[in-house]
Structure formats: structure tokens, C-alpha cells
Amino acid sequence: MEKSVFLISVNGLITNADEALIPAMDRGFLYGDSVYEATRTFQKKPFHWSFHLSRLFESAKKMEIDVNYSAEELTAEVQKMIDQHPSSNITLRIQLSRGTNKELGLSRTLVNSRNNLIIYAKTLAPNPKEWLTKGWRVMSYRLPFQKVGSQTKAGSYIENMLALEKAKAEGLDDALFLNLNGNLLEGTTSNIWFIDQQGVIHTPSLSEGLLDGITRQSLIKLFQLNNIPYSEGRYSLDDLLKAREAFITSSTRFLVPVVEIDGKKIGNGLPGARTLELLNLYLSEIKKEYVI
Image 1: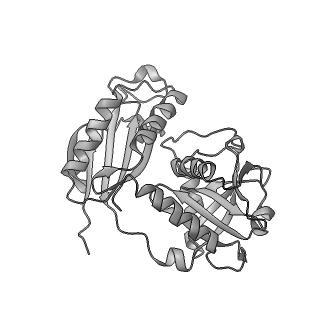
Image 2: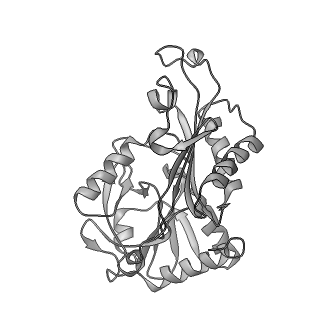
């Protein structure tokens, strides 16, 4: 097994993870005043980088963060990390904070530095095989507040952390968020999909208040190209429980079957054949551009 190496770049200075330092007055640290993207590499090539870069700028715009880096400069910093990391396949997190405050306070006028750019890079192990043979067991988690519209990939993930910790404490793999109306949103770090009894694929609409995942976007385009029936809409937990199959998606996990929620089986309680077919279709598309 390849040795795991974890490096972090702070404003261009690359060190081992346990040696990395950020300013104590960094607004990302103080207030979650930051945006980020997470992806991976295939043989030193960043996965869907142009999409992640574009979304990073979009998130910064929504949060009114002035980005002090050009797209080319950000790309160069990420590439420098990829080149220096000894592993060919790594997970990448690119975090951009508004900058460093000169004193405590929420006002943006207190910022007296450029953005702080932090890039995390860690050797990526293959996804566990049992994800595809056994699937994920999850719980529902109702948010205490209402989200509306496509969400920003911001640095504050407290509710996601609490939901995941609650799920793990119960021996589960993840939690699925429900809004105040009880409608499905997404996983803690993923999008959720289900296949109904007629074979139509469904995923919650962005208008419900969820993140437009890059893998989500890629799958929708793939469905459109292959005339695969799908729908974006408003769905309840009951809709998921009545489904034939379900799965989550993310950039590092691809497609993972979901076989149980709140102790109730989805379909026959095993990874579905159609989900595995869609995974193979998606991986075939990736192989056109990447060596995996």
C-alpha cells in the first residue's frame, strides 16, 4: 500500500500538514468567511478543474469576497502542489478566505491583507469495495433552518459536521438533509438521487436549497446525451423510501449506492443493478480524458 502523504500550502509555502500555520486573525478561521472547492487528481491531472475553478469564483462572488488571484494564478498554485506531492492520485481542497483582520470584528473594512489561499493535498486511497457490494446506510437529518436556491460552497460546515457525527455515532455512513418542509436536499458532502419503480432517475432541484455538485452536473449532461430519463424536483422522504434504488454522488466517491435510511430498506436493501450500470457509464466517460 502506498504511503499516505499530507501536504498543505499556505499562500504558496508548502509544508507537511503538521507544520502548516495560518494567521490567527484569518477571517476563514475566525468567522468561516471563506469559500472552497474539493476535488482529486488522476495521475497528476486535476479532475474537472475548470468546473471547480469556476464555481470557486462564483461562490466568492455570492459572498462578496474580492478574489486577489487570477484564474491562471490559482491554477498555477494548485499545479505546484500537485507537482510537489509524491502521489499521483491525491485529494485536493482549495480554500480561499477573505484575508486577515487587523483587529477583531465582523466588518470587512478590518481586512488588511490579500486573500489567504490554503491548499490541502493528501494521498487518496481507493474507495472501499464494500461501498459497491453492501452500499451505504444513512439517516435523515432535518435542518433547523430553511435554505433557498443553489447554495454557496462556503467554509462554514458546522451543521454538516454535526449531522455526520450523529450518523457515525449510530454506526451509519452518512446523513441526508431534509428542509423544514421535510423535503430531501442532499448528503453532508454529496448529492442524493433515487430511481423510481418506472426507472426514472430523480434528484432534488437546486431551488430546494442545495449545492450544485460537479458530479451532479456531469451526470445530468450524461443523461441528456444518452436519452436517460431523469427529473429534478421536490421530493419527500417517502418518495425515497418508495424508490427502487438510490445513490449519492461526489467528486471523490463518484456514485455510491444507498440501501437503507432510518433503518428502512430502499428497494431490496442491496446495491441496485441500475446504479452500478450508471457508475460504469460515468467511469467510462471519465476514462475518455483521465487515466484511472
